[in-house]
Amino acid sequence: MNLLKTVDAKFFHSEIPAKPMGKYAHFITIRVTESYPLFQTDGELNKAKVRAGIQNKEPISRLAMFKRKQSTPERLTGRELLRKYEIGDAKNCDYNVDFSKTTPDCILYGFAIGDSGSEKSKVVVDTAYSITPFDDSHLNFTLNAPFENGTMSRQGEVTSRINSQDHILPQTFFPSIVTLKDPTQAGFLYVFNNILRTRHYGAQTTRTGRVRNELIGVIFADGEIVSNLLWTQKIYDLMQQKQQINPPDPLNEDEVLNAAKEGIIDLMQNECITHTDFIGESFTPLLQEVKSITSNENGLQAMLMQANTESSIYAQTWVLKTGKKESKKDTKSNKKAGAVAE
Image (cartoon, rainbow, N blue to C red):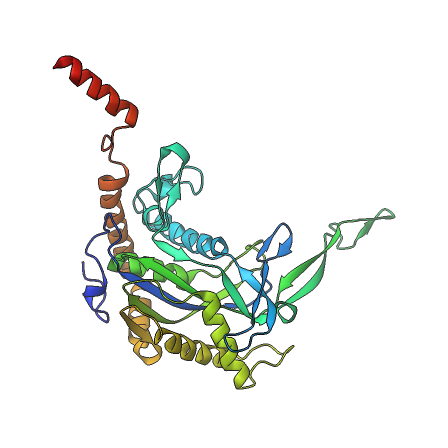
């Protein structure tokens, strides 16, 4: 089924291949915090000490958004839609407990169920880093848990339910490249839609963690492209040269997006792979077409059903098929039995 008109069909497979075939779709994304999210491990915000830029060699600490902090909310968004429209085995698929092994989520994002099987993720996400330093990107808040009357005391006793927690500030920017290996058109739209729709990341997603994803382009290539860290460092250099980084003031979003586009275009010129870039104006028609499909209920359902059909066929052929390989023990037994028979 041909779902897209603005992109050449040569960038996609007609079905999900069993082996890597060298087609990559890279979603070029800027993640923008819009509240006070928490990307943390063991109670502390994740951070890393790295070089500030490619040209600026000063070491700085940056906030880190680990890959699972990005991919898990996005795949849960897709699973929610599959259940809403009752497509495939989504209702019977229990995330991280009992995967159905047949849904687009299972096949594209992967799963592992011990001895019951596994599927390697075709969606590749790496750690993303804040453009601004850690010290200028977080704030410590004091938290409390009052009694029902709204105060911290009752019958003369003062509660000790008080704590402090570092939170990431609004308008902190995390450049992130999401890669889909060997996409079909339906698989491409499925992942694209998940990125566009996901709004909460990190811990306590029901109360905070609001993040908006600004896609600035898509790059089709025959291999992987630059890392999130290198792209972030390039953006930092470009903005610093224009004196657009002035802590403690937040970065201007328009200036970040312009630097991000300029940075990725410049970095791609040094890549040793073949690639077709949809950045800036060339990306606008594709983005509009994708939004027209995903914001229309009929178009959305058709895309989800196509993605599920492709995933089910792949699962029946390559994941659920039994008796394809014999164990070493069975092979030896068969050889011995064959020798006796002869």
